[in-house]
Length: 128
Image 1 (spheres, rainbow, N blue to C red):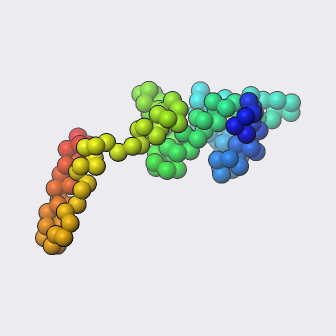
Image 2 (cartoon, one colour):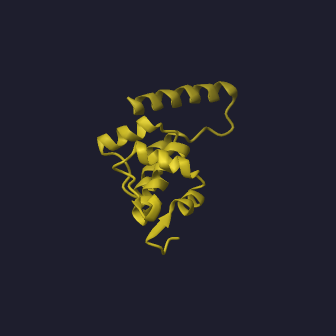
């Protein structure tokens, strides 16, 4: 399918493991993002770029837990990943995050609780 310029809705549905009716729903929710070409009899055919956008959309909705409204907000704000590479770069943990989450080894329960509280405080500071 990667070598084909157009893919049918059934091919895309199988590739993404998403029912065809879900793809049609996403088309209605994101008309500027997902615009399939229609062929004879109204059959939908997706360009390679559109399939890539669908992969990103599926990841945002299913793996990252965003809602339809959340994805629409990303689109409005211009923060929607443009391609899969951008999506992967956005999901890589920062060095700051990795440094924060290094738990103390061999600590007793009191130290673990203090560490957890400190970790929550740091997370709150990052989120604010």
